[in-house]
Image (cartoon, rainbow, N blue to C red; front, side):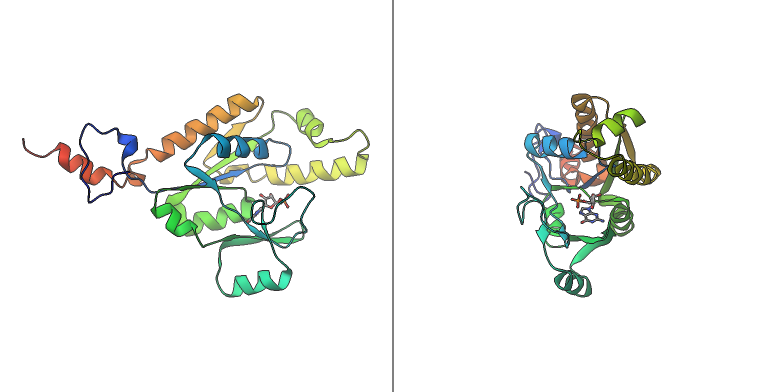
Length: 223
Ligand code: 5GP
C-alpha cells in the first residue's frame, strides 16, 4: 500500500491508496444470523479481522481461548477495567465483556479493519469514544415466526426456555435505532451481499482514504 510520503503513480487504482481502518460493529439478537455473517466476512475478506473480547463467562464446548474470547476470572477483569485496558466494557446476561484496546489503535492506523461482535451498550460506548472510526450494522430476523423457529434449536427445548430466548431477543431488537445500517436477514447470501456493500462504501469514505492527499496533489501537479 502506498503511504502518504510515497506519492503514487496517478494510474494506480484508488483502492491501493492507504486508508485508515474502521471498526465494523455487527450486532443482532441471537437468531438473526450474526454468527454466520461474521464467519463469512472473516473467511472471504482478507482485510478484516475479529476483535477478540475479554469475558468472565465460562468457556463453552468447542470454544478456543484467545480465538473466541480471552477467558478471565472476575478479579482479572476488574483489574483490567481499573488499569484502563478496555475501549468499552459491559455486563451482559450476568457476565462481563470488554474490548481490549491493544492492537486496535495501531491496527486502525495501519489500515486494518476490525469486526466487533458486541452488544448495544458496547456499541454506544465505542461510538461515543471513536465516532468517526465506527460503522454500526444491525441484523434483524425476517419475522417473529422465523425468529422463534431459529431459537428453537432442539425439539426437546421447553416452552419456558424458548420464551426466555424470545424475550431476550426482543429486548435486543428494541435497540435497533442505535445503528447506522439495518439489514433484514431473510436469505444469508443476500444479507451477506448487503453487508459487503456497506463495508465497501464505508472503506471508500474520503476521510478514511488517508492516501488521497498525496495522490490528488500529484494529479493536480502542473505538467
Ligand atoms: P456470548 O456470551 O453469547 O458469546 O455473548 C453474549 C453477548 O455479549 C452478545 O450479545 C455479544 O455481542 C456480547 N459481547 C461479546 N463481547 C462483548 C464485548 O467485548 N463488549 C460488549 N459490550 N458486548 C460483548
